[in-house]
Image (cartoon, rainbow, N blue to C red):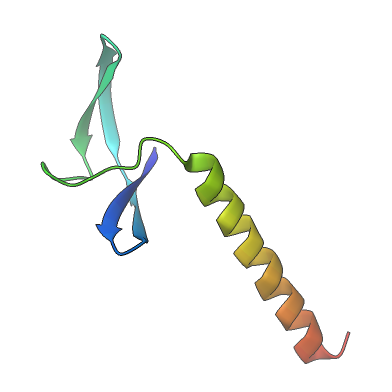
Length: 68
């Protein structure tokens, strides 16, 4: 599983986590984050969209440098 930790100033760090058993709407995180770290719980669509946009822009730049 992958989560995003809010590092502040608009910076998000992806982290792999090991999860335990879900109960009462919560999921135990056994490894990957520390107590007190802020984990993104919403906005995944926006983050995914931004990631795809950056990928597309990087691909377009690469084509321009290759002369296509």
